[in-house]
Length: 283
Image (cartoon, rainbow, N blue to C red; front, side, top):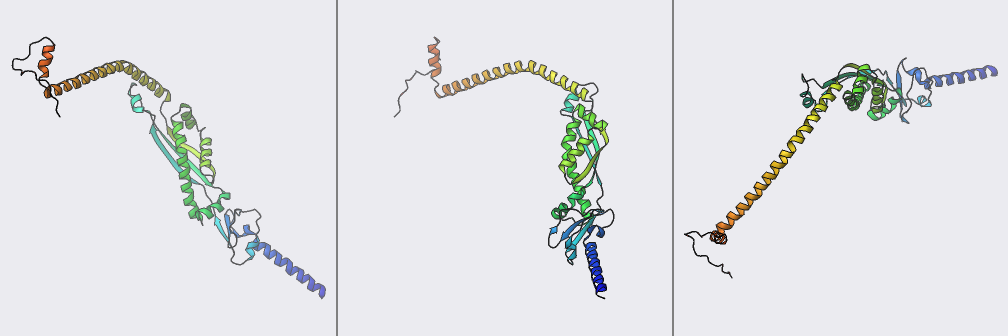
């Protein structure tokens, strides 16, 4: 009888241990293909994501109402990126070529990515995300930020001969994806796909640029001497005019100076001129 009691006690202990193990085994609480973030009243958000098929046990589950699992089913999202513009001074350079070629460019790309499973706890803690709907909204915003970070690189590539070729043949996609991942570290395996590209003939643009710069150099060489001469003449005329204005003000104030200057030059004074009066000191 005592032996049966010991066996039953051991069996109950085994069953209790098995029940505790099953209660604390977190992957059993989530659906296949889903991920979860562990949140407890005692420890808050745990930094490790609960992954399906991987062993994860915690004693926190043994405390009633202490544990909460936030399930997620992360799916990739896509964001279209459209850019357009023209090469620097395109209108001026185009005017120097026959037919006025178009030096504008346009790009359309598709940026797609999902959220890294390891980033979920941080997003739950920082962004307050609690479900797939909130995660999807965050992902759209993250793709927009990644697209904004790619714009300077895309513009630089479109304006460079080698860069425009790398966009056209798709060889720039890997570098663009790495730039997107660096801009938003929470993104997993971002991919950049070129949908369409229209880039100008860079060689023709460079030829037009050289023609324009050569013309402007010849124009400067021809115009600068004339401008310098005209500037010197204008300066001389201005100085002479200022001198005459000063003489006019002096003669208006002392009209007898006209006769004095005439006598000094050996000319007879004016018939109506009054006798020269010496200046008197005023006290």
